[in-house]
Length: 140
Image 1 (cartoon, rainbow, N blue to C red):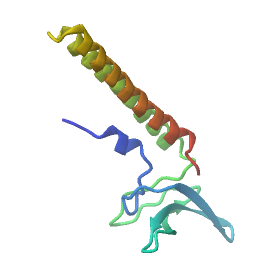
Image 2 (image 1 turned 90 degrees about the vertical axis):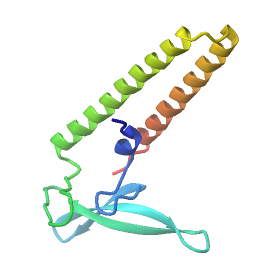
Image 3 (image 1 turned 90 degrees about the horizontal axis):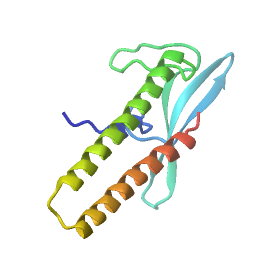
Image 4 (image 1 turned 60 degrees about the horizontal axis):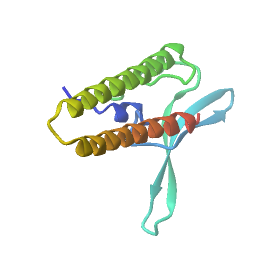
């Protein structure tokens, strides 16, 4: 079974299932609400902000026809996200080791193996940099 782990980590809106830029909190009276902010290009090529309502900031909300969304301060949700990141990194490491082993066991000349090792290293480095950027640029 192949799973796109990068899609699970990426910021995907639980309302419209599209990638989004950041969370935005909006206070109304004594309540604070969380929105996912999308930047959608219009016909002139300029970005237009689109907001999807996610949930109140401090509580769960269950609505029919929508998946349950969790507040940003939910420790269980954060722990699950951290576990997903850890599992993803473990998976990357395992696949890297397997690919490296296949390269070494191949009958290719050493020059070809060196090129394959470098390409594999560049691919993994690029993916890890993408993950690092995603995590460090994460905004609430």
